Amino acid sequence: MTDDARGPDTNDRDRDRDRDEPPDLSVLDRYRPLVDDFAAFRGACARPLGYTVRVNPLKTSVERVRRAYDERGVEHEPVVWHDRLLRVATDSPGASWPYVHGWVYPQEEVSALPVLALDPQPGETVLDTCAAPGSKTTQIAAAMDDRGTLVANDRSLGRLAPLRSNAQRLGVTNVIVTNRDARNLSTRPLAVDAVDRTLVDAPCTCEGTVRKNPDALVEWSEEYLHSVADLQRDVLDRAVAATREGGTVVYGTCTFAPEENEAVVDHALSRGDCRLVDVDLPLETDPGVREWRGESFDPAVERCARVYPHRNDTGGFFCAKLEVTG
Image (cartoon, rainbow, N blue to C red; front, top):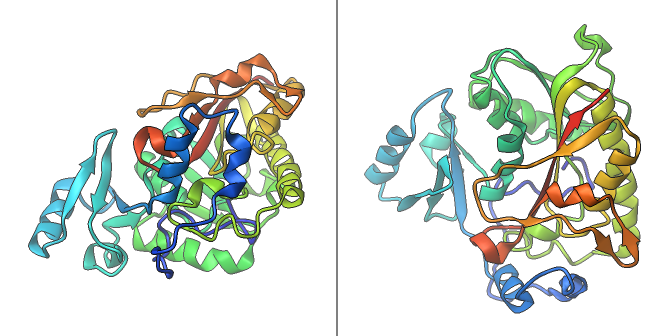
C-alpha cells in the first residue's frame, strides 16, 4: 500500500488512540458468506493487536536483540512461523535503542508474508512498486543480503523521507528510491529491460488493519472500494509488464474485499501474460474465493491465500503469486 489511499503501515507508527471502545465492525458483515465461524472472525477483529518487530540481519542477530530486550526488561517471544519476528510486550517498539540502531523494524506479522512469497535472491533486480515507508523494502533488502538492485518506488513525495530514513537506519545500500506513479513506472532509467521480481503491496481499504487501527473502517464506502480497485488493477498490470518472462510478481493487500483481491487478480489473468502459482505461506490460510455477489472468477484464484484474524491471531491479509509468461 502507498500514498494517501493507504492507512499507516502495520506497526510503522505508534498507536495514538485508546482502544477501550471497540471499533464499529458493521462493514465486515458483508463477508459473512465467505468466512467460516463468522462470530470468531468478528471477535478477533474487535481485539487489539499486540506489537511485533522484525530483526534486521544486515546489522545484528535475533539472539543479540533478545539479549538487549532482556537487559531492559522487555518481555518478548518468537513468532513460531518466522524466525526473525518477535512479539514484544511494549506499546512503543520504536522508542528503544535497538530500533534507533537499526536492529529492528516494527512490523505486524502478516505484513511480512508478501516478501516471503516473493522470495528475492541476492544479485537480482527487484521492484517494490508502492514502497513507503519501507517495511517490505527493508525486508526485501535483507533477503537479498543487500546485494543486487532494489528499486523502491512511491508516488507520494512526502512519504519518500521516511522510506529513505528507514533504509538508512537499517543499513540498506542496494536501494534506489524513485518517485513515480506505479501505473506507468518505466524500467528504462535502470538500464534493464525488465526486473526479476516485483512486489505490489497495493493501496487498499485497509479492512484487515482494524485490530491495530480502529479507525480503518470509519470512512469505508463501496464507492471508495471500487475506485481503489481500479488503481490496483492498473498497478498490477504495470508490474507484470515490468517483470521479465519467468519472473515473479506478488500482489498483496490488507483487506478482505474480493473486489480488491480476487477480482484484481482475475483481471490480470485475463490479459494472458501471467499465471497464478501456489503461495506457500507458513501459517494457516484460506483459498481465494471463486464467486462474489454474482461475479465468477478464474478457478485459478483458489491458489491465492486469505489470512483471517481468527485463524492465527493476526491482522487480515490477501496474497497472490504470479509467474510472468511473456
